[in-house]
Amino acid sequence: MAARTCPACSRRYAGLVDPGCVICQGAGVLRLGHAGLHKNEPAVVARAIEGYLEAYLRSVDQMLPIGNPKLEALASAVSELVHAGMILDPLTPAEVPA
Image 1 (spheres, rainbow, N blue to C red):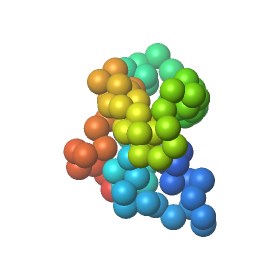
Image 2 (cartoon, one colour; image 1 turned 30 degrees about the vertical axis):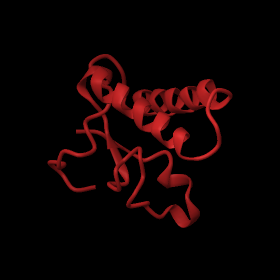
Image 3 (cartoon, one colour; image 1 turned 135 degrees about the horizontal axis):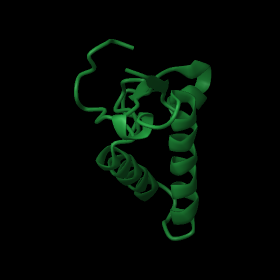
Image 4 (tube, rainbow, N blue to C red; image 1 turned 120 degrees about the horizontal axis):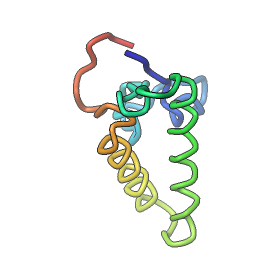
């Protein structure tokens, strides 16, 4: 199974994992789903996920006030990626520890 470091946690000071991260739920990694890996290399899927999350936040940036609504919107984007099969649900335990 392929995994990618969390795009939000990897940008934190010293790359420390945030236990309250809305993207990885404190795991530090996103496990890539079978839907994306079916036809693409893991590096391509990882970049696509990062691009989707950034584009999603840019699209809602003008509509939402500063603060927690953006975190809720980001959690919604992660939920869409899980539903599409691009990433596995961060709340389910990993078969292989990161």
